[in-house]
Amino acid sequence: MVTQPRMAKYFLEHAFVFRWTRVQVGAGCGSDNNPLEGTNRTQKDAVHWTRHALLKFGEVMRHWLGHKGRDDHGFNQKFNSAVWCNATFVLVVGWIEQKFGESVLETTLDGTPVLLLPRERLSSRINGLPNKARAKLYSQTAARFLAVMGDDASKVLTAVHADPLIANLHDLLDLSEAFAMLTVALYNSKLEATLWRMMGVDSTLQHLQPLMKCSCGKYMHYLVCEHVIFWHMHCGQVTTPSTFKLVHHVNKGQKFGTAAAGYPLSARPQPGTR
Image (cartoon, rainbow, N blue to C red; front, top):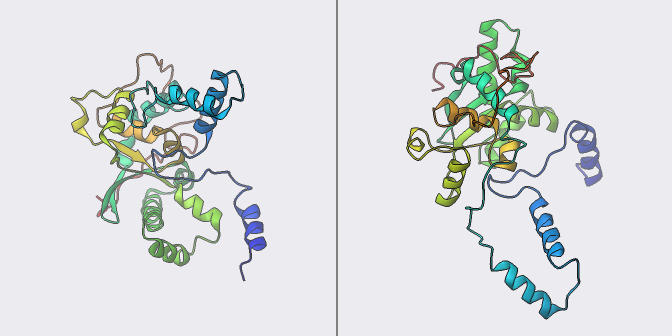
């Protein structure tokens, strides 16, 4: 019988010792309370940390809220520098130069077109294998990945139980990070326009490829990641910002196809996956 203490013990032994995660919600939704706490600090600073009576507090907040708009995305000027930075473009330009686009799988998930970009967890396992064995493992992992990434909870649960390589939560999380999955970002027009603007994509280029979103945790937190940047650069929409200086394209010890760089050297889409 699975009791609460037993489940807690399992998580401590098989999950939390390997990684920490935040609850992953839909892209565009806050996945932590940092903005809320920051706003609270701003409000307190504005009144010099004075505890006002209720009516006075209401007057202060009325004035403060009068300058805010729930749907106003125009204030966004740039992405978070933790992602939109020189190091990210060094990595992405290296992928472009080494034709990583040829390794992207175009397939569908529950009838929705998706793009699968192999990540370092998969790369570290297939590098060094003979070409035939590498292609086979690559294709099999993609099929297993898609089986556990659908929206139908019952089908996903069935797939997890049927997969002999998933023995615990750690194995499932490992599989979920084998690929970065890109899908078309169906955002409202204001948010979509904001993201295009912050990526520096001119309106004349937006028709070349729809705005994409990614399944990776970094994208869910920042609404941008190296996978989305790469794909839109591969499609001729994003260019390296002039303020970044690409001193080198691949860090020492991070040749394309190594675990450090994150992607297999010669993985290719299998027949029938496009």
